[in-house]
Length: 130
Image (tube, rainbow, N blue to C red; front, side, top):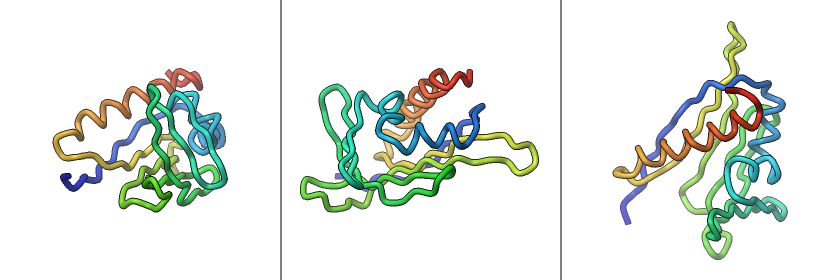
C-alpha cells in the first residue's frame, strides 16, 4: 500500500467556536454531518458510512478549539493516520474557520478534499452558516 500523504484544507464558517465544537467533538454532533452514525465507547469512536465502519480513538481535544482522532486497527491499536479538526479564530476580524488535517493516497487527495468540502457544506447548512 502506498504511503498516504498529509494535507490541510481550510473552510471559512460563520459560527461561534463554542457551537462548532459541539459538532466536531461529540458523537451526536458528528453524526449530523460527518458520518451516517457515530457511536462512542470511552475514548473510542465508531464512524459508520453506508454500512461500513471505521474506528478511531479520540487522541486529543481542546475545548472550543480542536479534536484529533487517530484511526485504529482491528485490535484497537493506533495506526499512523489521523484526522484533526481545528477551529481557528482570526484575532483581528474574529472570523471563524475550520482547518482539517487528514491523510490520503497521493492520487486520491483531490477526491478526499472534495469529500471534506461536501461534509463541511453539510455542517454549514446544519448550523445556518450558508
